[in-house]
Each structure stands twice: as C-alpha cells, then as structure tokens.
Image 1 (cartoon, rainbow, N blue to C red):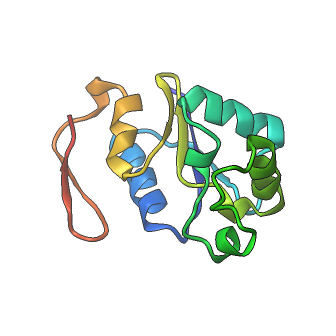
Image 2: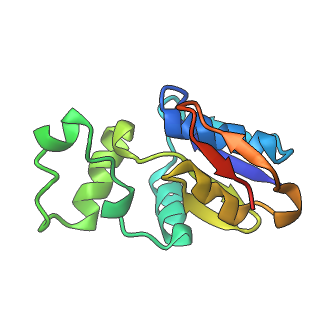
Image 3: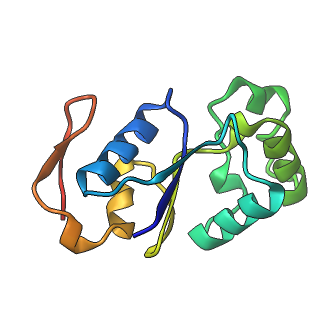
Length: 135
C-alpha cells in the first residue's frame, strides 16, 4: 500500500502517526512539508480529499497566525491559502494519504481509519505513554 505523510519531525503528533504507520508494517513516503511544502494545487487537493475546510487545516497555535490576523472568521479561503503558501508552518500536520483516504491525523490514532484493518492489531504506545488499541 502506498502511504504518504506530510510530516514535521518536531511535532509529537506527527512522530506518533509515523510510528503507527510503521508499526502497521508500512514505510511511507515522508514529505517534510516545512522543507518541501506542497504546491497550492496539491494543498487544495489534500484539503478536498480530507473533506475539510481551509480553516480546519490551519494551525492556529503558531504565533504567525495571530500576527497575520488570521483568527478573523471573515477572511476568505484565498487569503488563508495565501498565508499557508507564504508560511507553511501554518499547515496543520500530519496529513496522511493512503489508498483508503486522506486524513489530518490529529489525534494520531485517526491514521487507523486509513490503514488496512489486516495490518492492525495489538497496542501501540505513544511518546507520552498513552496506549492506543489498534483495531
């Protein structure tokens, strides 16, 4: 199965998601999106495929979010996309694409929804010690 993860190695949720994918027996294509951001068209496709709004894919916890006034709910999707293109840190992570779908994997166990059930089972322990039952 082909799996791609838009990954930030400094993010615990992203690291846990990657570890769950590997625990299920897959080695995904890893795109460190801060070094190699998706194009505007690719990001729009990811958002569409995940069934999310542009705002739902924005990382509001970053200082630049407030600095740019992006909390304004009247801003258009175009303005939000422009901000993510200029500042990829505003793209929430990790986004995972598999043959079973595309998900923003927050929390990390959301990735289980797009991994084959046959590759799951047992438990997985996150970095913080939380134990996740694999389906």
